Image 1 (cartoon, protein in one colour):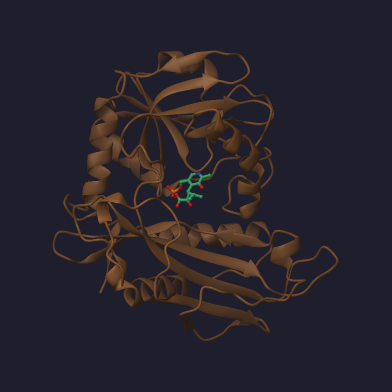
Image 2: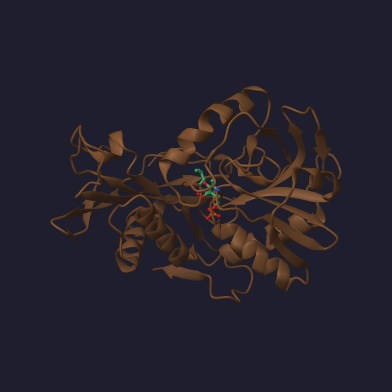
Length: 339
Ligand code: PLP
Ligand code: COI
């Protein structure tokens, strides 16, 4: 194994020793297979290649000070993947199979789980694809579920330093009644053009608006959005955003800390009154947003002191990471061990 600089890991692909696979054929899931190859061999007419039958999850395994490896709310990822499967007519991965394969992939690559204290974790990528052959637009009859892992640092290179984001109005990530609420690859394809353009223009990410009226904030490319004002945690409610497990947890934690929590439509106009803003997700953790520019209107919004994360975001970030790494009491039963 090469020497890894755990504190400087980017968020990216990292080749580890094993991945875990299971095939769905003839109406049932088969045996779990372990592979040391990063390649997948599939038929050229597989539905994942043509008609987007593909869903994925993003989770992390965290090593505590005690050396033990923790998963955070894996059941929620299992359930979300089932909703994704239902949404585009793929076979569901049973929760127990999901858990067994995730745990196995982590255990087999245990040496890649970053040691405690570097803010790094083992990223877990469960992937479900239609492998059955179709040329007409139909769902496949065969599927592959696989789990690969790799050590990562935070998604945004700024880490817990404020980032700049850009509101776009000439691209939508997802339609109001489309697939925005499930974790399927098509949503990310739809976000690529605007995201890459925003990066080229100096932004960490885009913020998409809800597609119908373009009045309300939806979410960032790879993370949910939240704002804070008057001791209130505010986050968009929309049919076209991914229900983030991190965001769900932050809402609970904010309530536990005595904040008010509002999950509702958040008009762009309201940005001006927010004291703090942030993006949250498994990969992003909490990424404080220092400034948002509206690409079309030219309007700019800034939050808090320049270059500094706000007090509530900092508190929430510490608490969340504290629970995930086993430093804080797990009062809601969110953490389980991979032993
Ligand atoms: N929104 C999008 C579009 C995402 O890709 C993700 C990442 O999974 C999130 C939000 C955050 O979700 P979670 O907190 O469950 O990782
Ligand atoms: C995650 O937060 O886990 C994600 O999947 C986001 C992104 C890398 C697509």
